[in-house]
Length: 170
Image (cartoon, rainbow, N blue to C red; front, top):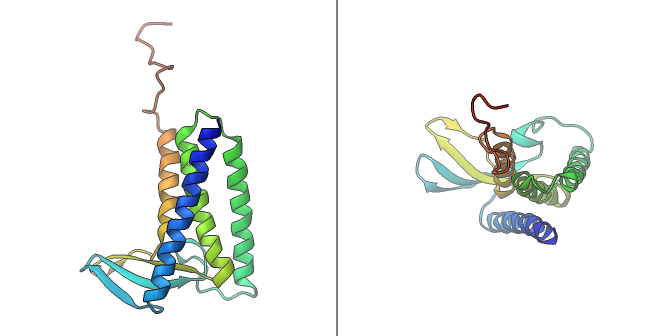
């Protein structure tokens, strides 16, 4: 049981450290809206400051104390996720690992929100005139975590202890 907790805490720590390290690198090398092409026509590093929530939601909204309000909402969500992780059945391994990625990502973005008033995004994927929302390591970890949690819910993930019943039996 302790090993499982160590794995989850390690994932959280690695996500937070990786996220903050990449953001520090971007802060030190790129000015706001400056871009560096990595793969022409597909992938740039572009420094963007997101003052809203996921996918730029509320970016254009100007309300009093917006950074504080969003930080409080993020802390409440993080507390809820942490509580949920603590209540999971030990057999839900992928969900536990997925939640560790989500929690690590949430902490990484919360650090930005509290210290800078915005979240630093920099991965800029595009094709022709289409651009995906800029994102960062924390955002990618959150998406990986959610995907792992969904995989555990899929019906093809049967355990060896629950074999399919043969036709005509029982």
